[in-house]
Image 1: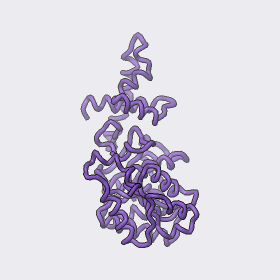
Image 2 (image 1 turned 90 degrees about the vertical axis):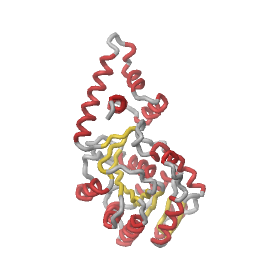
Image 3 (image 1 turned 180 degrees about the vertical axis):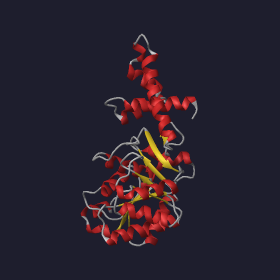
Image 4 (image 1 turned 30 degrees about the vertical axis):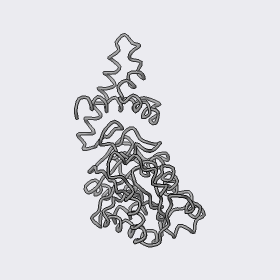
Length: 305
């Protein structure tokens, strides 16, 4: 890490570590400045003190210590000022200022989220496995949230098919939640990517999973909902995906629910009944994505197909 980048990342971490820090506001300020350093200096009031450099130096030194520990632990740190930051996340209102990763980064231009309930039926598990397998065999990255149920089935099927899978999690990357998915998470780190917007040691919380769903929706080019009740994170992600301008694909078995029938009428929503239809629909979606990595931030127009 160059000295300049290290200073920028340290400044952003120091900003985010300040008591009461509002991450979305900090992201907006840093983007407007094009640098985290002047934003940190203003917040510390360093220009108004006799020893202007002391609070900056102390804050940056503390942040650098954390960065060194994370790097030594094999954790990737990607800020909104870095080229390694996932391009699609720059396009959503809930853009996190920093994401932490374990595993292998990739462009993941052809990435599709497969999500659903934590308490699925056998039919739902079968649909998730069939979908994830078909997507993986077509060279499409399968994204999910590493939760019990549909998420676990999707990740497992993608790995079994020899495909790439990305887990966007609602805890820090040093946590295992649920505990029963510890070996699956480790396998994804080995063969894919685990990504989080939370500090590496952050525990799960009621607020973390809706935030995770927003980032998962932003990371993926489209979201496939397999099985979900009205009050589910998967339905929430479908709503977020449409807000982000990402297409949504619904398994036709969902049409038993009022919310799914209402969503099916919206632009950018597709209903499929077979794995072949799913792959054809996703292929139609991903073929609209520009080849240039710099153009990945323009995905909202996909809902107008």
